[in-house]
Length: 266
Ligand SMILES: Cc1cc2nc3c(=O)[nH]c(=O)nc-3n(C[C@H](O)[C@H](O)[C@H](O)COP(=O)(O)OP(=O)(O)OC[C@H]3O[C@@H](n4cnc5c(N)ncnc54)[C@H](O)[C@@H]3O)c2cc1C
Image (cartoon, rainbow, N blue to C red):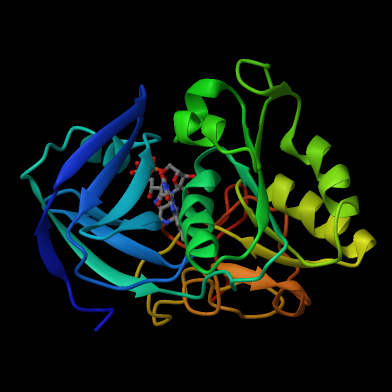
């Protein structure tokens, strides 16, 4: 059951760059690309992470250090035990002709999606973006694959410029299919617009502060629609995105309050 905590040893740790690592864990659950798990560090906290891959004998998550939990997790070594719950939420559909567009750590769930598309024999291309090479996971793997184009804001890997630069060419290059995006919200909203204009579908993975993962606490509800991102998301299609009124606003913190918003009404 998704909500049952399983305690597992870390099998392997793969360092990509400073503050960016992948962790291989025993395959104690099955998940689809875009779904997420929660990782519990005893005495620290429990936080959500997308799966970045599935190997025959391991699940993979890829973690960027941004605060107390992720910094502690990046200190973990093979043999250390973590708690794992999941899978949670809805992921990407497997559609041939997809264009994958990732920003920074958003490339993690797209790596799992690319694996699954390959297994299903479905063609795809992948625009992998990041601020700089040091923010890009799996760079060597991405460099080897001719279906991938890398973009970095500072030109330290691939083409200099935002990942959305490559999108117009990709959208014009084949019959209308689906844009699968994961990364910062401004990038996702730009993808949504570009897909709409080109008549493509969009499936976009959004992030909100998540606690329970099972839709009970209401922490990740989206204003205007009431969608619980941990259950009906994190991947949303255009129909699900309709009616959401809080795109582009600062995200709610652990208390449920937005930065700069007043006290919650009673
Ligand atoms: C569905 C989903 C999938 C994710 N997948 C990945 C992934 O594959 N790799 C990865 O590195 N990160 C991923 N994250 C983000 C990851 O959960 C946060 O980086 C982590 O929780 C930060 O905790 P912290 O204590 O290190 O940082 P903090 O200092 O507590 O926070 C730093 C940032 O992370 C956000 N954050 C903190 N706690 C949560 C939470 N419980 N839920 C959502 N956001 C939070 C904060 O709002 C803030 O923007 C994902 C988040 C979600 C919601």
